[in-house]
Image (cartoon, rainbow, N blue to C red):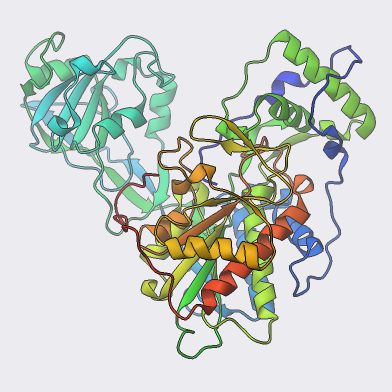
Length: 585
């Protein structure tokens, strides 16, 4: 599931304390004694625990290097999926008769030839101003009216978003961190969101940027090529001299909305093909199992997961320390902030580690640097592959065709699913529904799978699954899921808590189904939710609950069959989003 990676704090508990007493906890530390290897068995038509385990240990192995976009480990993963589709006899549905659809990734670097002026004065990049990369589509500042936006974060001293629309807005800042981690500068996301309809926002404070951050901004950044990019607000830091040049003197005490001199010229980024992707292309993997009904076989039920994860960590950590600290103090993994451990907390962790390491002979204390992504999203990817094998082995196929797709670059920003839905290899209007599986290998009673909108923690169960978006476009599709659960005797515990409008975790917008939903294609996102190993080094195959994963895969399979055999496409009875607009849950 898409989210920026947050570094583990496990390095705090490398040294074992002297105490022998093991702290009381509900966590099952015996899982750290499980084998890290598995002997793969030939897979069968049935969706089985053995098949899922065999596939997942291959796909989330250390050798895959975390399957990060642009790395050979990701290409190894997509090659494995494509080879299996060929073996199973699926119809290639990528480009040029292959199973692969290449997603173009570009490098964006600041154009050093940019010429920005205030009157006759030319501003010097990196000194007078610094432009942050907001992605393709950043709006121009050339000749646009410039206004003073006030002191960001002080509502009484700020212009409204409506008053900022179409203008270049220059803002001052409050003393203090303001949530950015940089003294004196506000959080960029908050500023850009508030002024999202402005041509540009310029924060006075280049002087506050540490030299290291300026060096980082000079390095190229990666992103997906945009054919028709959505216009976005340009984002700058400027120094006080540049601000004074715009307003003809000191800006302190200016009334919000004061008009200044417009800039001439523009600052921009250049795009080139990303070098890492010449050898390691970003691939969606796509295959089809044709339906049995001649009138419906040119329509598709799409079943998807994402094939990438977040790579490796340049600062390795101790595996069992990471596991224990997160399961005690960071129970939602990267969805929780890193904990600040007291001396008593460290002593507690060290006592637990002493006991674990006696039982494992020290093997649990291995140095770890690979974000294996066993649950996120090897669990979804291998469940979809098992479903492909199931349907390939059926003598009588469902009426509609099944479109299987493993999206790349979900972790980087839903790149693969966005590219596929913008450039589909089947007619987009022929896709009647999309079923997304992302993190379907956990959801145990000991897992904190998320929180309610009100902030109460949620735990899993033996048959737990979260449903996101199932009725956001089609009431009928949501009803169909529940019907399958009842009539096919799956008896899954369906949790809709994280689908609430305005939920702060924003799960509806954080995985590949939304790329389909934005075009009005009904979706259901199936997940067993979060846990302490989410986006951590400890998301490894030995911690997956394979019987639970099997239950979810069989459930989604039967939902796919029911949708594929309807005599009509699931009715869309809710408003469709703007395909180029921002996702809001």
